Length: 325
Image (cartoon, rainbow, N blue to C red):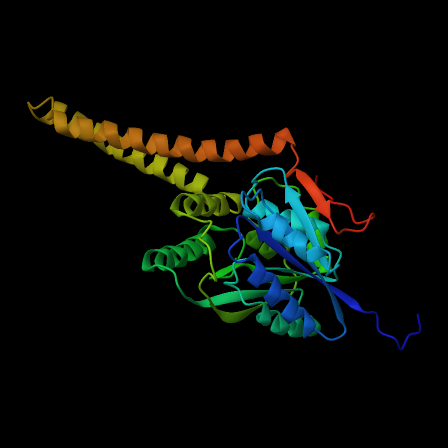
């Protein structure tokens, strides 16, 4: 190729989907409109159907006949959002990869600004949520607290108020693919790899249609996984609790000895004894629970099962293999 002819770059968009039938038509429409605005950049749209029970995969397939840029992975069952993101990233061939959910809360149009930052030399460009429209006060408050707690506990500096909506260069993507852990927290992993990163503020919109796939139970599990995957501080906190309890117990022993030696009062009330027993028992159970969470993650790692199982792989080239099956 002559030196004066610049190679056409490829941008890969990874779109995880789970029961997105009410919104997927509009999602594809918006993504295609965004793609039409790109100059000198080719695009591939990698959809990952995470075991949907509705017509999500069928609708995506209906667009593939008229648009060869659309590609689809269909899981054999629901493996979870972070695994779906991972599978999509594994399957991409682009010089840069953008992660974006199918619910249209993250605007595809913001990717233009991400591409500008990429051209400036940034390896990761992430969206920072300044407002979260259509979400309850409880969810906004708990999300805000989670990001700040995670940043305080984590051994890695994870940007505040960011989700998985981001652009990553091929260098970063290849580094992520080489990271084999099973309990995945993608935004934390991207922070861990380093490189030159920058955020772009934006207002997160309401869902175009459908329901949130993260009820309170899943949000709590996701938050717990994020903290335990990137910090050993909960273990250190358990040790500190143990030392505090030991100090309190030593103080109690000295107090009882003082009563025995210097007074005629040998036995204090039943209430104080029960409070001490329950307090120590509670701390012990919490500490064992924290330890169990880490052991459970070790157990998942040593089994070495595949991260996901792909039932169908459509639209990919023969040599474009899935790397982590």
